[in-house]
Image (cartoon, rainbow, N blue to C red; front, side, top):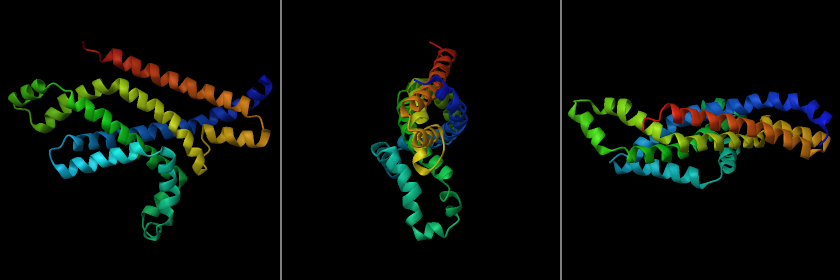
Length: 224
C-alpha cells in the first residue's frame, strides 16, 4: 500500500464522510418515528391497521434497499402526475430520494424491533398503570415506550450499524458520500485497493463509535 497516495486522498474521503453521517442520522431520526408508528399499528386490534403495518414491514424488509432507492429515484419520476405535483420539488432531488428510501427501509426494521419489545412488556405493569388511573396515552409514553426503548437497544444498535453501511448505496443516485467519492477517485487513479482500504477503515471507525455508544446506553439504562 502506497502511504503517500493514501495520505493524499484521505482528506477528501474524510470530508465525504460528513454526508454519510448526515444521511445516517437523518434516516434514523425519521425512521424511528415511522418505526414506532407502525409498531403501534401492528399491536392494534383493528385488522385493517394491522395488515397495513404488516405488509409495509413485509415488503420493505423483503426487497433489497438498492431496488427501493431505484424505484423512488428513477421509478417515481416516470409517473406524470407526480412530476406535475408539489411532490416533484422533493422527489426530483437525489438527496431527498435517498433520505426517503433509507427512512422507509429503516422504519420497517425498526417497527419489527419495537413491535417485539411492546409484546414482551409484562402485562402486569400495564394493569398496574390502569389501576392507578393513568390514561392509555400516559401509560404508553410514561411506561410502555421507555421500557420498549430499553429492551430494543441491542437490536436497534445493529440496525443503526446496518443503516450506516446501507448509506453507501446513495452513490448509486449520484450522491458523493464516502463510497461515492471513493468510486470517483478509483475511476481516475485506477487504484481500488488503497482507496477501499481507507474508506473501509473510516466505516469501521464509525461502526466502532456506534457500537460503543449503544453499549454505553445499555449500561446506563440497565436497571436489573
